[in-house]
Length: 447
Image (cartoon, rainbow, N blue to C red; front, side):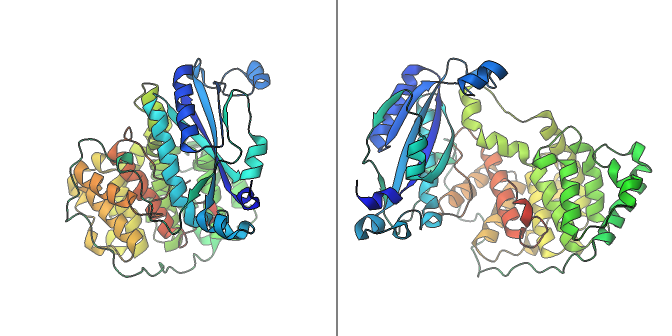
């Protein structure tokens, strides 16, 4: 093989199929597509030596099969000029991400067409992935196979990735046209962490009186050890600890919902700086949409297994608790910063079916800054979700999906509910936009 090809970018796709026959057909299709290595073997959620000890963590997939396919991507420029990785796909990886998203959607369609689902992927330098590829059940090998990506290339998502079969054509009036490039949100530094801690303690004392009466996730705020603990160096340190106590590592638990009224009250506390308040609002948006994100990400799996949803009871309870808090949060609209209004509007839109029309009327879209494509897209999506018009939501989602790099992580298939896809996109757009302004940057957005 030409030396430059060794600098390609490898992606190993995993597909889960209901039968050996379906796995073989999918494997053959991926081989024809240009994958270098393709193997098929019976599903095991853990290696043999571990599953025999711990048991199968996915008993519902007993008897199913998996296909493992390694595809290697190079750029036309890299293969034509020769040379090292600086001229190949790896150096252009950010530019090529839309193409890889398109490839992931194509692989997911292969899995769907054979009654299964795409079950994730791993990426890395081609030589690394090729060395680590498990050849058990190998069905196809072509050491020279590469998929060449033309550059520049204006790639779009397949039309059906977010569009249900009965969706009408886009309406010309959906959403504002993108304005000039947006300016970064400006909010003062959150200031002294002690003041934010004092505000949190005051809210907790007002709501619960003592640690014994507080929810488990918040009792530490009223504990004597906390009162005399070393001070925080930054406001973000305290907010990160608070968020982890409420939803450890971003996972909603039965105790998360009990903390939502406190978080909503803290976000409305006058002594809380705007940047800290923004962080709390974004945390509420992330946690209340976690179950919807899981449903969108696992829509094909749920359909293949005959399930309607994989949301946990904790996720549903948190979603309802945040929806109940939205009317009170919107009461700050007139005094909120521009960045806060974006998050408040997103919260109202994400919980529209549970929030009454009279409350929704307090969200004034004309108050929202729509400069730049991302903000214009977010405002258009907020409007469509607030109207609870699925055709409008589908039109906006379809338009967003057709913009390379515009919608992060959106390769949802036809099994995902249109509104759910819209909520997930909105959460990511808003979180990405305000992340540099609030204190959530170090926590990685909405995950």
